[in-house]
Structure formats: structure tokens, C-alpha cells
Length: 210
Image (cartoon, rainbow, N blue to C red; front, side):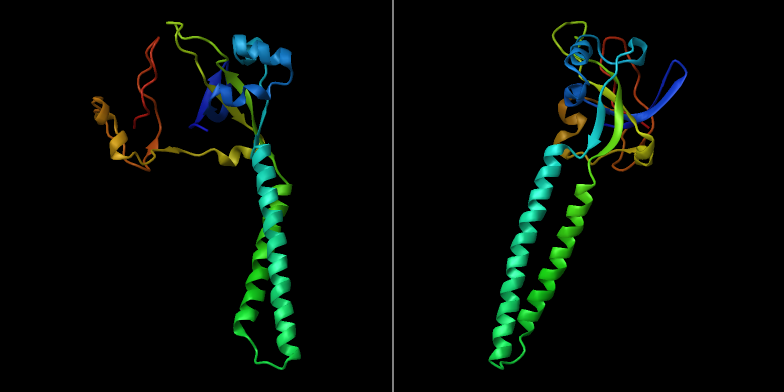
């Protein structure tokens, strides 16, 4: 997921975020819609629509559910072993074991955590938005590069996610000057990014600047 932005098109204002087209292309509602989106992109002006974007992905939900189930099963077995050992000690009139008691309490707490996680994941995925604009598989003027971008409009229930974009921490080895790029403006990590560099026809948009 890329930066959040406000987009104005034909007097309509959209709040959303940028991502790659190849990430959302399979969300089209039908094979025909996918073919049209690949060829012409997605835009309300063309009456083409992209699909709904959900979070998290289905495979991530399944993996989290399985992990929670496996963890609960293992902890329940461990809990039963602790309780069985505690029972045997009581029958033998042995001294109370702090280790066993702590093991029982810790197992019960962990089971509760995974059960809460399972309940939360079961209520997912949530719809975070819809693809409103996208490049499709359009070619750049030199016809050697494919454009690959999409704008997802946030659903009303997800507008709370909209927030300022902040500069991430950039390792020294990846700073622009390491590649011969002389930047006149230095943006520090965590500072807000509220504009883009100058847009030049036929060229990449420059990095965001303050």
C-alpha cells in the first residue's frame, strides 16, 4: 500500500491510497471487466469499475486461523498434562508445586489470547475500499515500460485510516546521494510529506518533498 492522498476528478473528491495495478487487477467482477481494465484502465469516466479491496487477504486469514487453532490445541494438551500432574501430587500428598500452578495459569492465559485472536479473525475480512482509478497494462511512451498504479477509494467505514504520510527511515546505503542524485531538500524520518515534486510530462514524478 502506498501513500494516502486526496484526488479530485470532475468535481468529485476521493480520499484513498495508491497501490500497484497488478496487486488489485484480479479483483475485477468478471473476465470481461478484467480484460477491459487491462486494456483501458479503470476510470469513472469510462464507466469501468474495479473490485472491492479487503483486508487482510483470504490466505492470511486462513493461515492465522490455522495458527490459532493449532496453538489452542497444543496449549490445551499442555494444560491437561499440568492438571494431571497436579492431581497425582495431591493424591500422593506431595508439597504444592509453584511450577505446576504457574504452568496452569500461563497456559490458560495463552489459550484465552488465541481464542480472542480467533474471534477477531473470524469477523474478517473487512472492506477497506474500491478501485476507482487504475493504469491497466498501459505502456509508457517509449513502449518499453508498463504503467502499474491504482487508486483505491476508502470505504466510509475505513475513512478513519486516512492519515498524513510520513517519511520512512531510509538506510544510509539507500539514500539518493549514494546513486548520484543530488537532493536540494532533505526530508527527515517521520516528517509529514504534504506535496509532490514537479510533474513533468513523459517522466516520473519526483519524490515527495516538504
